Length: 146
Image (tube, rainbow, N blue to C red; front, side, top):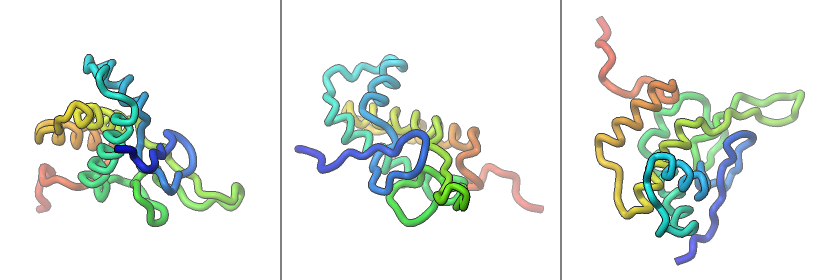
């Protein structure tokens, strides 16, 4: 089965409105290899499909909790806008954070192997996003208000 389009949101720079992945197939393969996960039997098209699925799963799980503004209505939650810059006649954007890219790569590698992250994995991913200040007040592990 052929995927219709694979459009990656660049790590840095302006948003790509039709982007459907935060990472490339190569990024998934490199990250998996660094973690000792072999994806030698998985072709690039399958990795692209896994990257798209992983991007959308991460956005679905954490997207509403990501900190920062989300300019316009589009599919992906990153990059975050800094606002309109009259001098540049354009929006300035944060890039896609490294932590988000790494988590998407990890989830994509898991999907590519025909598996799914377990609840402990998702908790670890949330903890990494919180530690990087990429998600805000979302849990009940904060002390209650007096």
